[in-house]
Image (cartoon, rainbow, N blue to C red; front, top):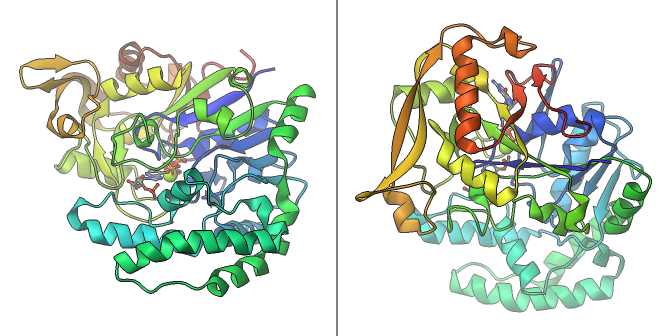
Length: 430
Ligand code: GDP
Ligand code: IMO
Ligand code: MG
């Protein structure tokens, strides 16, 4: 029985939410395995749009179990708010279709405070984080002082952990010239939420193991994108978790053998939100046109996304570090009506041409893309249901991308709508 991991192959916002929603028809369980509510995944189903930050995109499908794995950092306030928002949109959510790992670390208000204090102190050198406390929450996890979801059942444990956290965080607050926090300020609001969170808390690794034994299909929903990975991304302009496919196993409590197919979600051009290197970024009308036609504004922060040409070097690197078996190529329709399309096929660094993005942040800023020019198409791709419906030059563009990135297209997306998706290869059954 196939289990599929969906990952972003660029800098996030590739359309993971749309593709996970589409694939979830074939899945029994959808699992988030890293990140937190820094993610923003958009689902468009008929005339209803859902924006999910922490809940797995399977939540809108009846009969699908949604799981938040141990690799996620969970903000309990945001979690409960999002449940309420979706309920208001008619989605049924209860303990039968949503589980949170007992060993998932919590994001507290002090994490968002620290995130924002750090960004402010960095000034122009800021990372451009979502300000949601993701980095500081992962730091506390690694430093072995995090409060985890299951801890909410034990008030004494929470109090002891808060004291440990404050010893560290108040030292930082003093350093940043900010107000120190008291134990009660943290413990009381958190314990007030505990009875609402605890019913969702479960032993995720075991639930997933049982699901696998029962022959259920599991879909792992990545957040962010490969170039934001803490190890493989454009460090330090990255998020604070591993976002690559290998993390699906670690962040859910399954072994690597649980994964049968890795699907990389890939935008037909490139975008990035926040600071950091972006070799193919366009600062001209073409870039602005992509942003306008692609509605490139952050789902979580509303910030305009930076736009540029498709970077085949970067996506090929993502194919390798994730073990991507096939890609879902999204937002092809945004390229409709363009006469010429450029694709980055190498990076010039001084006198040499590189076939990969160097790890050094200094070199990443210096590389100059080597472009190949392809013919665009005037026709619309929207409404296409098969390859035969696509303009010949669009098919050529796709074929060239497949060649350059060394991975085939399994799915093609030509609008935000669930049904505007062309299946070439079914990752679950083919
Ligand atoms: P995610 O973070 O990877 O889930 O992506 P986001 O939801 O943040 O951003 C992708 C945006 O593009 C959303 O507004 C989607 O509704 C939209 N989208 C997804 N696929 C397509 C597509 O094929 N064409 C167009 N035009 N929009 C798409
Ligand atoms: P989805 O899942 C795009 C970016 C932020 C910033 C950097 C670090 O919707 O694709 P963080 O708050 O994580 O510490 O910010 O990472 N970032 C994203 N960019 N899509 C996302 O998620 C992102 N999540 C974080 O903009 O540059
Ligand atoms: Mg997004």
